[in-house]
Length: 264
Ligand SMILES: [Zn+2]
Image (tube, rainbow, N blue to C red; front, side, top):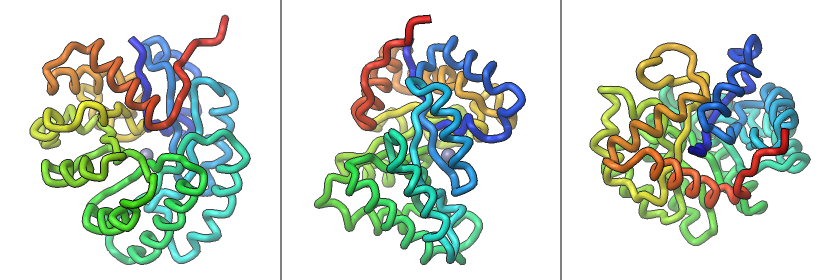
């Protein structure tokens, strides 16, 4: 079984004590590749160090997370943009809109979102979207790009049927499914069976949002396998089929070569 954790912050300090063991467990669980979304200017170096240590397995993405957008967002973006062009980044992310903690930075978030969508379009890269309590603003932004080649993924998709239909209507966006699919109160059991099968990606968002039975503890990329099993149960399909499907979907969106492990 070959899985891809399409959203994993394995470079953050929560893994400093045992990162090699965490990666080994992921690889042993069949999680061949980890896609690494950036957070802010301070996280760039650690992210690049991890991707350079495992260039075929840990693939870098670059962007400014909406929770770290403020009036100085253009300053924060400078080293991120530099890294985007200096390294083999496979996407612009994570970017988007987050109004969970209030609307004070809303206008800056919208401006930073547009700017980073521009980065993606100029480079023909997908965008990895973080959307929290902000579907309305996010859709208002994306509606302005329907005549472009913009493509991407709604990471940790937590919308309902209406939001899923809107996303599916864009035609070029995927749904990132993670630990929330395993939560009893997550609501996704009503949504996942209706998603277009060729748009489903697996992710963990490690170290956050661990799936059941690890909920509340540190999440790890190996748990992609638990998410895969849950998605298989919701789709009423065999696990192996979901693995093949979601890996193919990720390879298509991010234009990844098929994975062949390096000789030992
Ligand atoms: Zn994330």
